[in-house]
Length: 263
Image 1 (cartoon, helix red, strand yellow):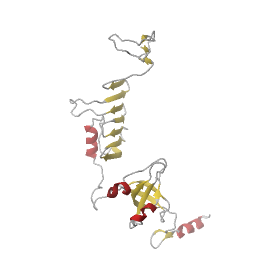
Image 2: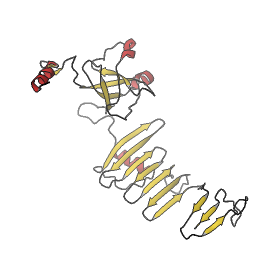
Image 3: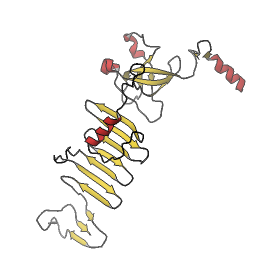
Image 4: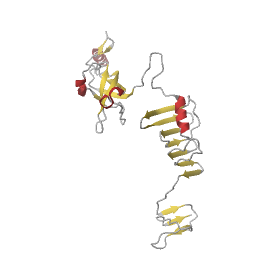
């Protein structure tokens, strides 16, 4: 098709008077939609009430609502639905054809407040800093202009935070329970559970801290399950199994199933 023919075909699908795509156009338009139903495993689409076109649709026709997949391959979007959560149903942004037959979900809507007011769901930088500090995450640079929040979710059953400092490159994934992974310039930190705040109150937790010259492991119990345990490169054997009997340490504890300890 020549360029002039292509332009004519394009103009045929555009309602110039009302400045919008014709109802039969294959052009994608931007819309807001309420999640009516998450279709579940095996079908990652959302059944959606697209607005304003379907705002007045009778409820008995909701099962005929359009179903759209995520816009980006490899991404699955779910949320609170009208079917399961009633008026707490969440909204998503979609792009779709004017006849609503084809569409894609871009992501969840960030709700507006009153005109001129803040977003209703705008995250508080102070809350994010307090959220990490209270769980004693080894994160130091909380400059608002440096901190980017990827995901910030809080639910009745927990929640999580994903954030990074684009200046230092520090990255954190933090669960409400205090379990955390951080990747930083000079260390990688992994922890399950959270030490109490203040630190004088003992709480069960374990962590691994890796730095360029040290690996620090702390836990109420450290369990090694290996046939050979290598603790050094001198070529010597500290202990070993000479018979079917387990290896017995100096003070009596068995170190089975380790058959050899190399140092």
